[in-house]
Image 1: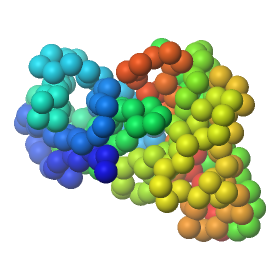
Image 2 (image 1 turned 180 degrees about the horizontal axis):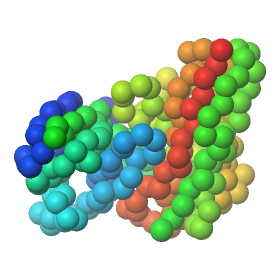
Image 3 (image 1 turned 180 degrees about the vertical axis):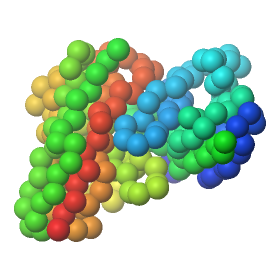
Image 4 (image 1 turned 90 degrees about the vertical axis):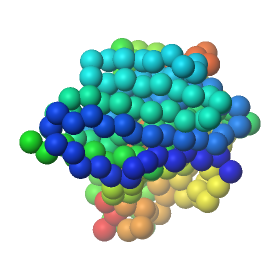
Length: 112
Length: 117
């Protein structure tokens, strides 16, 4: 069965802390892994990863993929209250049709 | 960037009626669109993959007669919830991938919150 699992399910930290969110997957014909941030409505795109070992970076956020061990991490340094959101990991793969499935999400709360 | 428009953003209907939700890619062509359902405080559950000009591919456990999907053009997919019941109340969100993209980013609509009374 194709699946994407994220951990932890929820996390409470204080401003300035660094957090690491995890995403592991088991799918056939992996194509890409995407990270999204969801605050109220539609998820907003953070990163797309297709190759192992290449870190993607955007400001305080960074992400890396390990296709051998089938996981990715999303790091957020110097967290701010505005980082509070649900972080979703999605995996794109081919299984008859090309589709994307999402993990359970990690609910992050950053306290002032 | 690519924009996906979804409407209505919110709809309230009576039990037994049908509701249509539209998903449009505004500045790109999308041969494939995806429909997800999200329950409160849960992740996005893939309902079906909508393919332009052909039948949608439904995920296991999703009733195709209940959730009718039509993808009549390269920029429009519709989801019709037929004979809606209170248990169909949920947040429905569509997404699209740019035609020809092999590993491309998913672009999301703003979602539609359905409340069935």
